[in-house]
Image (cartoon, rainbow, N blue to C red; front, side, top):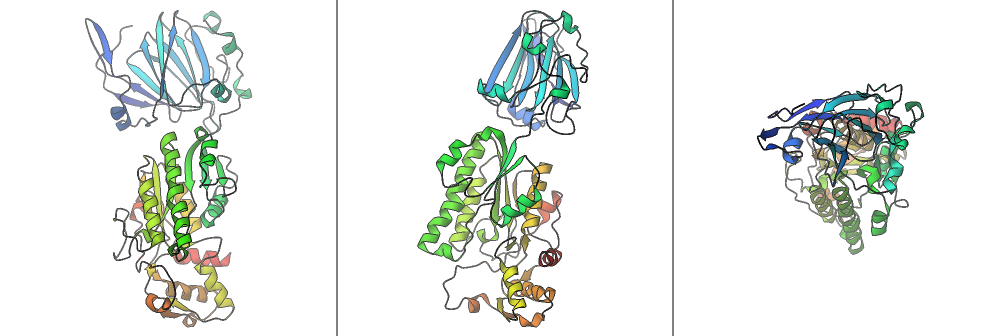
Length: 469
C-alpha cells in the first residue's frame, strides 16, 4: 500500500486519555520520500507533551505477521513506522477508570502515535521488512524491566482483532505467557512529593490528600533539604511533581546574623536544589511565595510586578521565586498573611480575647488572610486542571483589611467587644523594638487564579470556619 504524501501535520484524539495519533507530512518523489518524524516545536504547538526524549530505538521485523507486546513501560513513547506497515494495539494498563480501554489502528510511515507511561503497546507487522521506531524519554536498563506491566496478546477482555490470527503469527514465548487483564496489576501513577510537610501548609496538604497513595509527604526527618545526599538518594523517575511547602518565615529573626544564614539556606539554597531536580527530571515544581517580595508601595501587587523586598526574609523569598521561575514546569503560588494549624495571628488574638486582654494591633498594614486550607485547594486545582505554568496570587477573597480589622473580627466571633482592639501605626507598634521592615500594602489581586477556575473562599467565611474548628 503506497504512502500518502503531503498530509498536514494533524493530531487525532483516541479513546485512551493521553494517547494521540498523528498524521505526518511525508514528501516524496522518484527517489523515495522524506519526513520530519519528530519536530519538537511544531508538535508541542500542536499539543504533544514536551516529553524530552533521550533514546531512540528501532525494532526490525523480517516477516509480515510478527507480533510483539503488549508491554506498558514506565516511560512515554513516540512511536512511528520507518518502513512497512503495522496494525497497532494499545491498552490502558494504568490505575484509574480507563483501565482496560483499547485503541487499534493501522500505521504506515505517514503516521505516528504518542503513548504515555503505563499504556500497553503491541503491534503486528502487515508487510515484510517493517521497521518500527520508538522515541522514549528514559534510558532503557535491565532494572527498568521490573517496572513493566504486561498483558497477554490474546486477552479475551481486550478482544483485539489481530489481522493475522495469533496462531498463525510469529510470537515470542515470553509474550505468549503474559497475564490476562483480570490478573494484571495496574501501573500506579507517578508520585507527588510534598516537602516541608510538617508546617502549616504541609498539614493542610496532608488533610487534603488524605488517602491518596500517589502523594508522598516528607518533613525534615524524611527529607533534609540541606543535604545533597537526600537529593541524590531519591529515585526522581518515580515522581511527577514536587510541592515545596518548606520555608523559613521568622521575619524578624531573619534580620539577625544567624537568622539571615538560615533564611538563605532554606528559602534559596534548598529551593535551588529542588529546582535542579525538577529541571533534570522534567518535574512540575510548586513553590509558595509571599507578599514580602514587594515593598508594599503599590495599591495591588500583580503577579508580574518587579521584586522590591524590604528585609532579609523578603529578599530570600524573592531570590527563591527567581530560581523557580526558570524551571520550565512551575507554579509560584504567592500568598499573604498565612493562617493554618500552628501558631499564628488569629490564634493569638483568639487567646487574648478569651483572657480578656485588650490589645493594640497595627492598623496601617492592609491585606487579606490566606488560610492554608484554601492554599492547598488552589495548588491541587492548578495541578489537576493543568493550568498554564507561572505565578498565581492566592489569598482568600473579600475586601482588604488591616490587622486591627481582623483582630476586631476575631473578638466579635469570640463573643467579645470589637472595641477591645485598639489600632496603632506600624511605626508606633514597633517603636523601640528590633523588627524587620514590613510592606504596608499586601493586597494580591486574584483575577488570574479565578480565570483559571479557582475561587478562594471569602476571608470572613474562612475565618469563622477556622475559629469554629
